[in-house]
Image (cartoon, rainbow, N blue to C red; front, side, top):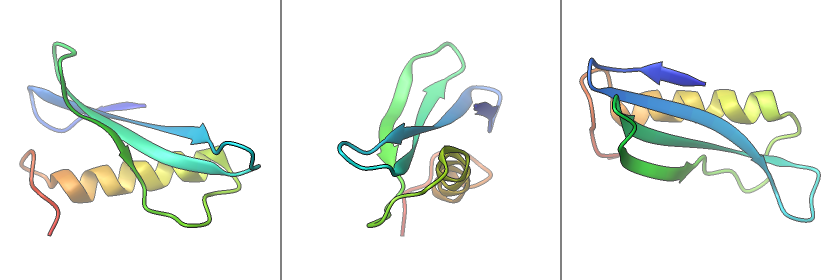
Amino acid sequence: MARQISPDVVYCSYALPRRGERKWDGWYDVLLANGRPLRTFVRVPSSEGFDDPALACQAAEILAQWDLGATGLAPRP
């Protein structure tokens, strides 16, 4: 799901299955509004993964919002 965080920047959260497991990982990408990637393939740090892809996607969305802050690209502390 793509969400706009500023007039020029959007992020897209998604879930991908883990290889050989019945678990999911949450990921997100940060893009300019024109589609040019700024930061890609950011994974939610989870040693166990998620049973539900919707939860993995929600975790990625929360992490993206925390990473990026309300004003744009902010580095993680």
